[in-house]
Image (cartoon, rainbow, N blue to C red; front, side, top):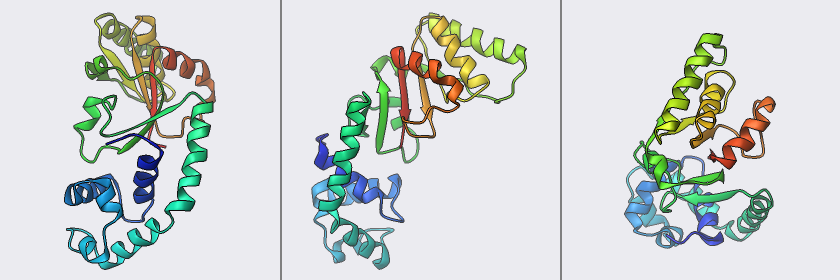
Length: 210
C-alpha cells in the first residue's frame, strides 16, 4: 500500500467512523481487497460484509462524502508533523514494528519521532509502577542496561518510575530504547521527562497512535 497523503486521508477517514476500529477496518480491507475498492464501495456491498450493519454502512458512506474537506485537515496535520520532525507509517510499511504486527488488531497508523529499525524486533518490554522504591528503580535500570549491552532494545512507556528507569538504563548501556506513549507526540508527559524524550529520539524512537 502506497504511503502518501491520499492513503493516510482514506485510512484516517475510515477510522473516524464511529464503530470502526483497527479490527473492523482490517476485515473490510480483506473483504474489498484494496483501500480504493473500500472507499468506492456501495451500500449493498458494505452491508454484505460481516459486522457491518445498515446503520454503520450509512455512517461509512457519509464520512466518505466528507473526503475533500477531511483531506485538507490531514494535509495540515502532515505539515505540522514535518515541522516537528515527526513521521507516520501504516501497518503495511516495512518500517512498522514487527512485534506490534503480531498483536490482536494492531494500530493501522503510527506516528513517531526517531528511527525504527529491524533490529528492534529483538526487544524486551519493561514496565512497572510509577511509585517504585529506590531499589526497584535500580533493578530496572541495571536490567535494562544489561539488555542494551547485549543488543536487546528496551521498550517502555516513558511514565514516571520504572518506565523512566528502564529507558535511562538502556541509554546508559548505549542501547536502543523505544517509548510507546498514550498521548500525541506534541505532549511530553510527564513534563520532567523532556530530556529523556529527546535522548530516546536520538537513540531509538517515541511512538504514538495519536
